[in-house]
Length: 102
Image 1 (spheres, rainbow, N blue to C red):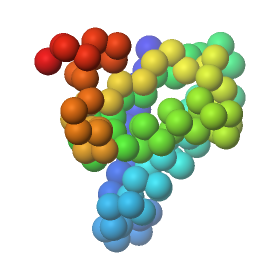
Image 2: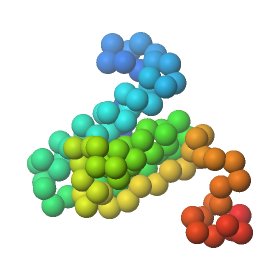
Image 3: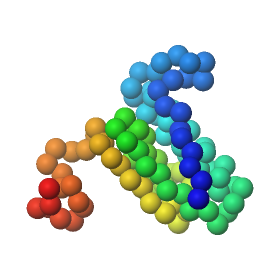
Image 4: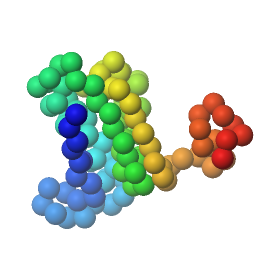
């Protein structure tokens, strides 16, 4: 197992990015990093976790993978975790499939 952090919030030159641009850039960087890992070790499974502002980037990556629009296929992803996701819909259950769970 190996852990890597996706740079977030700044352009390569250090300039701060607006929120939406930061999410888009982090999504692209996550996909690039995952693709590079899988190219080096094709049997590797990717797990991605996003916390707070990082959660939307991981969610977009997962959506791209799930829709078949990413360089990483769904069978190469072991799991996705979104924690404190600011894009989570209001009144969404805490646990999927358990509407009464709080």
